[in-house]
Image (cartoon, rainbow over all chains, first blue to last red; front, side):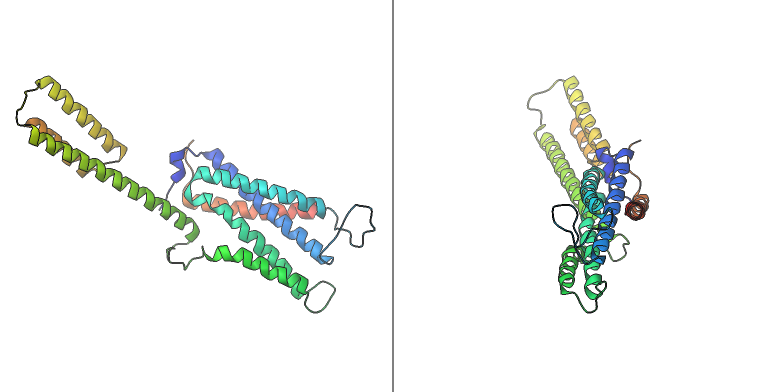
Length: 248
Length: 33
């Protein structure tokens, strides 16, 4: 089922384009951070550049500036993705949250790999293993809550994360329309009954004024029907009630 | 033109953006280090 919720808010091609640019930039930044971290882990896990001291471990060429830039670029792209995702609507605004598990699980994998297989050494490096486990837990914990198999997700869906967000918004919108519709219908029927009960000629009104009143009500009713607040049956019933009332 | 593409098209575009992002990130890293 297609739910183009963004249409109602006037989201356009530019919003979609900028959203995709945000995703692309975020994926590129995460990749550079991941590769930079591996380059540093490869030379022992720490490095330095500049300053007055003699440097034992120089950083690999370009990694220092690239890592710094990619962190800021990643934050900027995540902001762009969240901003345009909000304009596009329900399924897309939450996707930026996946950057958290992507970042922590991928960096945790690096720590674990170099913890179990330290470069140039044998045995296990606990200094990498512990942060590796912590990173994977930090990344996986929020992700597990959204995985298929949770009681809120549909077993037949191939995009459970998108569907869950869409269904929640759809249910709330459906409920709101139903409530609005039943209130309007109840009000109109009550008014029609009230009029027909009280219409035993207490004071005669001018026929012209009564016709104008009826036309105005029918126009309002028709506007409600066109706006989607009433379905066809409800519209017909309410219209008939108004006509019956005017005929008495 | 107003409106956004259908869910299926958006899913493909998002996956394409992720793959292109990873590829360009790798390319930038290899080119600059």
